[in-house]
Image (spheres, rainbow, N blue to C red):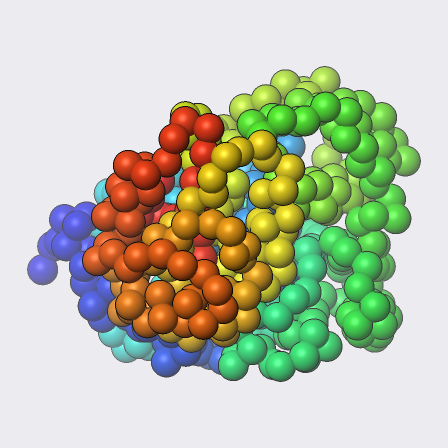
Length: 429
């Protein structure tokens, strides 16, 4: 049966277990299915040049920054990221342009028998679709973002030019481990023999493990902050100017990548670019980078992170949803002048909700909601838990209603934040 695009997506959501909607029951902790899928597709990944990006936080940002810099130099760049916010096709892009609806539909139609035989997860089939699409288009590079972990993630079927691990913090403990060292072991699984790896941050608990894995695999290890110096020149809530220095470059950029968490991500991305240059894979003209950074978000279709969606009142959506990400978000709030703070918040039911809520400020008006996914935590339950840690507000039936209430209540000089879950942000932006 030939389906249209909408019917194809409905079939995929219905047939294929999807972690974002269902949680751990959809998570496959081995590479068997993706190996079988790619074998059935003729192993398209063997013809592509990859930068492989893992980490707890920042991997989406780092992926988009690397892609943007490479695009600025005239290279064609495929990018696979997950999950999507508004449109499934956000996951699979070349130079910021989505895979076509026709290609999505044709892929599922042509390979339905293979899919039904292997019975992959939603994530596994989207990785296979991306690799198949990129192989047909032959971009110069593919930036491939890891889904969960690294060692057993479906993206780990590839051999990259460079591996990148942004940072390690507690998230998805039920699948990756309860300590930073255990989680780092899973993320470190993307380090391949003789392939260099860039580590985004020095961390006392994880540095020795990464150094050990890299040594065992004869891989050069580069810590981003050892080779890239980033300095703030000027800043506002909507843009910033930065100085970037490496062994080869010394220049300034103006960018709308605001939020202090992006400083680490920009540092990590430029360490990766420096390494690609050192490997002789690319040549860099910094003047072109300066031009690209003014429109990097739109040119790479980068949404959902510290995204300003209104100016009066200032309204910012940020998909921070774990301890480290929320700490960065709340720290940033202190740098923004505002009168009252309004927080639209929802989460999923497999997070440490009590810990997450404790990180948000008490002095705010809260609008509790549930995203329209099965994993979403009931807004009334969230409100009850929030009350226990001195957060007050009302529960709403939907993200849309919660956001509308915040806009009705806020004055022009107030600040509205939308946070807690990628899925809440997706319904608000």
